[in-house]
Image (cartoon, rainbow, N blue to C red; front, side):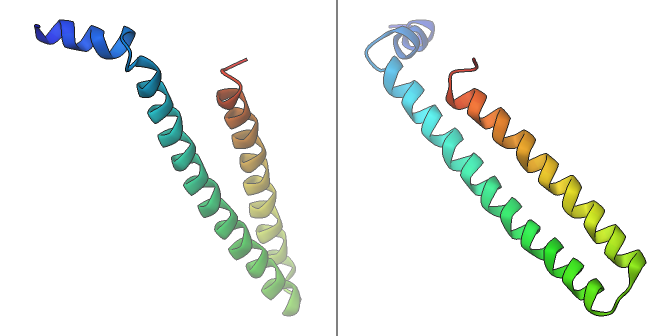
Length: 90
């Protein structure tokens, strides 16, 4: 069997479904890791906002609130994109 035949075997043969399942699993693990990291960053931003509020620093509060809003929007967009991937792109 040539190399191209082996490549076709894994794309259309009995291991094709396993290949797709492994790729889906890997993608899910990666997105889960990124989501966990994002939640940690969200906690840090909220802590920064709380510290700015405790010192009544309006400028730092406004900046922290902007960062939280940007981060929340990015998380929402990521969630919508992940749902699209999870649903098969529909």
